[in-house]
Length: 290
Image (cartoon, rainbow, N blue to C red; front, side):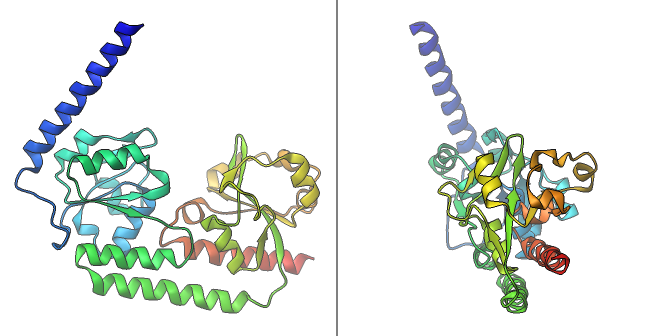
């Protein structure tokens, strides 16, 4: 057992040394200078990829993560990260001068590794609607595309403000949001999706829960009996969906199990405002059916 552990440590050290040599060879002469605009950007989450394009910095992208499929140009870029982590060697070979990572969706060990290799790393955090235009503006600052970024952020903010004003006096609708089904998962009130629901007068029945994402107790869900169940879905997943898991709920009996475009609602990026618009229209339909 001891020999296996020693061998494992030896492989880890060799891997780390190899990465340091690769980084030194490929990044030599490219010292971090936070004052200079980023010209080679890696975006390590699909939502961040969308934010970069929204900020007008798409031409500077050299790498993205798996599932970065919007806009269409993102599909052509090398993918250097997925759920398993970051392919550091592949990333380093692309010589990024800025790596943008999703703070809550990236392992701290990976972030520390990037910084130990002297790769400039910026954390992007999205909790609320206001964080999205702020992130667009920040990326614009980093890439020297502030004019485009500020214009895009302004449009997003205006749409959010108009949507909030239009829905603020409407009757509230209690909502259960399904973020996953195997197992059944939902969100609390601090999650960015819950904030999107609130703009439309939707009340997350699990808003007071402590974890941001968790598996709810079925008995509690039956007691709360939300008026509508919302989920992020695609046309294909809707076709094969079995909603029997919700038997016993009024929303199931009334056919109020509704879906929102998954790419819009599940990604904390520029299209979240489109998701909120979809949610508002759906909740208006629920109100009209009462």
